[in-house]
Image 1 (cartoon, rainbow, N blue to C red):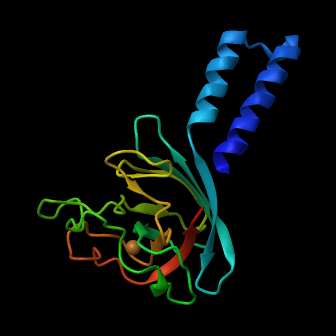
Image 2 (spheres, rainbow, N blue to C red):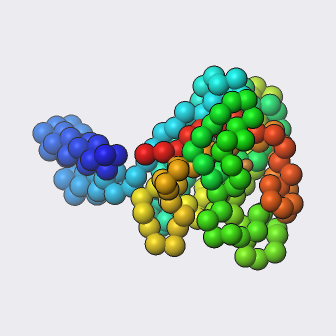
Amino acid sequence: MKNLILATTAVALVACNGTEETSGLSTSEAATDTQTVASLMSQSVSVMNSAGSEIGTATITDEAEGGVMIRLEVTSIPEGSHAIHFHETGTCDTPDFMSAGGHYNPSSANHGFQSTAPNPHAGDMRNFDAPMSGVVQTDIRNERVTLSPRDGLAPLFDANGTALIIHAAADDYETQPTGAAGGRIACAVITR
Ligand SMILES: [Cu+2]
C-alpha cells in the first residue's frame, strides 16, 4: 500500500515537471528525482511519552545502499544523552513500554558496539543528545534493518511489528542485554 502511494506521488511529480516550464528541472533530472522517490520506502510514526501523549515523530526511510535513516523530531526529552533502539514487538503500552519486549535481535547477537562478536543487535543504534530545551531534531542511521524486504537485513515490518524506544539514560554499548540504558521514556509503534 505504501509503495502504491509513493508510485502515485512519482507519477504526479513527472506530470508536474512535464507541464511547468518554470520548474528549472530538465526532463532527465526530473526522472532521476522521481525514481529515487519511488524506490525508497518511508514511514512516519508517532512517538509517545509514558503518559501516552504524542511528543513528535520519527520518519524512517530506507537508504539506497541498505539500512535506514531515522529523522527524529521530538520534544520534552530530558537534557542529556539517550539510548535509542528498535525493540522486538510493535506495542507501546504505557507507562513503561515493557510490552515492546527486548531489543530487536533476530540474529541472536550480543548487545552493543563494544561487546564480544557476534554483535551488535539489529536494533542497536548510537546515542543521541537532548539540549536543555528538550527539543531534538536529529538523524540516526541503522545499517542492519529495513522497511522493504532485503536480503541480509532485519525487517522492521515482521509478523508482530517492531517499536522504536527512547531510554532515560545513555547506552554504554557493552552491558548485556540492554546497555544499562535505564527506563523507557518514549515509544513508537512500527507496523504496516
Ligand atoms: Cu531499548
